[in-house]
Image (cartoon, rainbow, N blue to C red; front, side):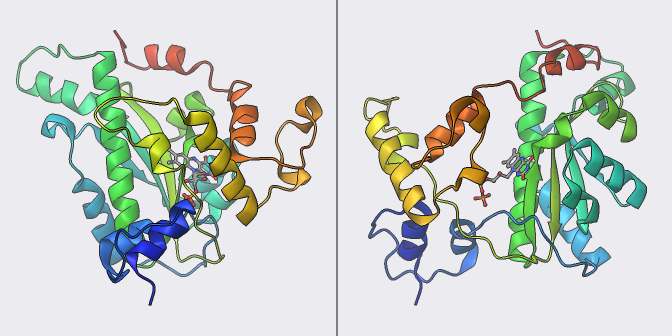
Length: 277
Ligand SMILES: Cc1cc2nc3c(=O)[nH]c(=O)nc-3n(C[C@H](O)[C@H](O)[C@H](O)COP(=O)(O)O)c2cc1C
């Protein structure tokens, strides 16, 4: 029988006794074994299930109960296709479910107006609260969707073309895309992706990273042993060449060595209703 300890070991590639003998069922087992899926069957996802999952998204906690996010449930095939083009991600256009989770300070502004009060919180903090609210709603949706047998994948590429994306979705000032989410019945097999060792991420009482190099080295080797990255999967080989040992950290460093093409994000937000002060 697979137990919770087995799932933790599979998640980190490290031995543990935590959860030994605990059945790998229920929410914890599901979260420990989760992975992203990007290919789906074309099986229809009924309206009932869609409604339930969106209700789960809205059940996430939200800063000061302000619920500063909106979800665009994209059904129009022409809009889906255009989103897939803007994101250069063709599978978005054929995913049975395509949602765009947005940070939204407009609703709060309108409510202040409706109640005859000034709106005094157009700040960087509000921008972040809205992003966090949207992300928690996305995660609640994903957990519920995975519990109901669907596979999901968040997509940050919805931020690649902010102007076109906001025009396409008619997002008014104060509303911006945080991440897309595709979902459907998985039509592919995916492995669990190893996570960084807890020692590199979880700090007891205060932040300590003096062992980072050794921890990353171990992590790189664990991932390489399970799934080495062939030359074809390596980034920026023109610049950095191909490597026999191409660890997670090499991939991360190559990815981070150039801008992601979203350099105008701040400027866009400033023209789209955000003060960011
Ligand atoms: C905020 C966010 C944005 C993401 N954006 C993309 C994306 O644009 N394209 C993509 O293929 N995967 C995207 N992902 C999925 C990650 O690549 C994936 O979670 C990661 O590789 C770990 O794999 P796992 O989820 O299967 O454990 C995103 C995930 C998050 C949380």
